[in-house]
Amino acid sequence: MDYSKINYFEKSDTPKYREFIISQNNCILCGTVLELKHITDRDADEVKEEAFCTHCDVKTRAKTHILN
Image 1 (cartoon, helix red, strand yellow):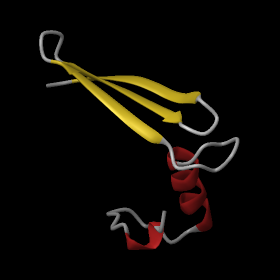
Image 2 (cartoon, one colour):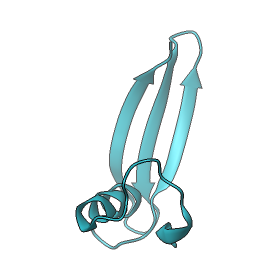
Image 3 (tube, helix red, strand yellow):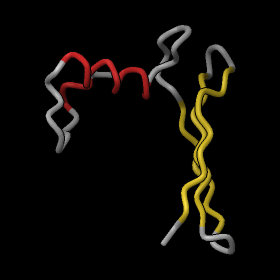
């Protein structure tokens, strides 16, 4: 993925920031772009987010976000 074409509001031109973006969007094992899955549960007012690598078959992130 070409991250140079993504617009960020934060100062994204520092090496540390770029490293963070890559670590959040790519598999730590093989570098493949992660697939994201979002499931909305309106009864519980939450969104479940999962990030996984289709190449390694590894789930790298699972979070639940509360809706306001």
